[in-house]
Figure 1 (tube, rainbow, N blue to C red):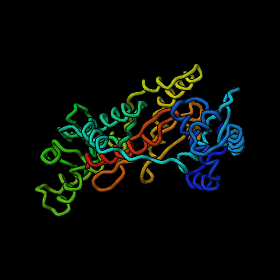
Figure 2 (tube, rainbow, N blue to C red):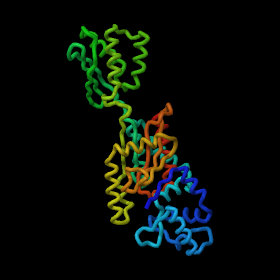
Figure 3 (cartoon, one colour):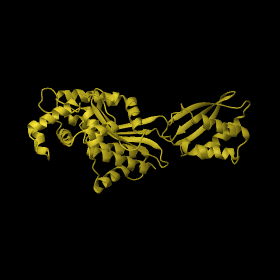
Amino acid sequence: MSGPTLDASQARLLAADLGARPREVFRHLVDAFLTSGEPVGSRTLSQRLPLSLSPASIRNVMADLEALGLLYAPHTSAGRVPTERGLRLFVDGLLEVGELTPEERRSIEARVAGTERGIEDVLTQATMMLSGLSRCAGLVMAAKQDAVLKHIEFVQVEPGRALAIIVSEDGQVENRLIATPAGLPASALSEASNYLNARLRGRTLESARAEILAELESERAELDSLSAKIVAEGLATLATPGTGRRAEEKVLIVRGTSHLLDTMEAQADLERIRTLFDDIERKNDLIRLLESAGDGDGVRIFIGSENRLFSLSGSSIIAAPYANAQGKIVGVVGVLGPTRLNYARIIPMVDHTAKVVGRLLG
């Protein structure tokens, strides 16, 4: 039903190789299918096409397109629908992506921006906004944010080892063991704790770490050598995996999955949606898929069984990465729905939302 998959360059080559007549028939057939979700017959196409073709001529063209693996006939229907291979050809080779109107751009910016919002609020609002506009599920994947710190304390637990106790503003408490010099006096631990609290309270570890290390290296820190070693060791330990603040950790926000039920048109669709809900629950797989969208610039489109995650549910994702103020890709926004998405409308919507989120977070 799907045939061999195409990558973007193959899709563009195949689209160019199609003659003018097959290309027009195929484009109008896919447009009609994406609008109605129903198999499209030759009579419907004869009314839509700007070309003067009889239904019989259109059927011959459709048969050729079916032989290329771009169309298929579901059940015993006389109409045809695009295969996943056909959708890839359409999206990468024939789709004319529209521009958002100035009003749509302003609406997206107003709904995402708000005032004095934290990062998570911005991302959640972006997810809900994309879901509402697309009538599908909205997705945002982001790096887990460093916690804002409230208090740090070093406590000796045995010779050569101390416990670093880190309390975040949100109430989370984290404990890490660090190595300490032999014969360390309790005053050195106390001095190191006071030094870090004065510089970290109300900040994230990541935002203050480089500044503190630079101060230690330049010997501007008013610390004795033992306390300075504790501070350096503490910073190194807290920055390593296992603290709960790893850069590799990702947060996945999904909103609007109920919209996916609106696309159901038959009992088979119900089974597909149930499978899709199971796919969404496999968050690690979904995060890995979205991470691949962050590997390049611009919008990425994943169609059906091209990706193992959606091999059964037959779903699509339109996703775009967003960057921080330094230009580093830090997350991905997107829309998840059936392969019968309004690609021309949703692609610029996702693209603009990613730019707005990046600008706000920067």
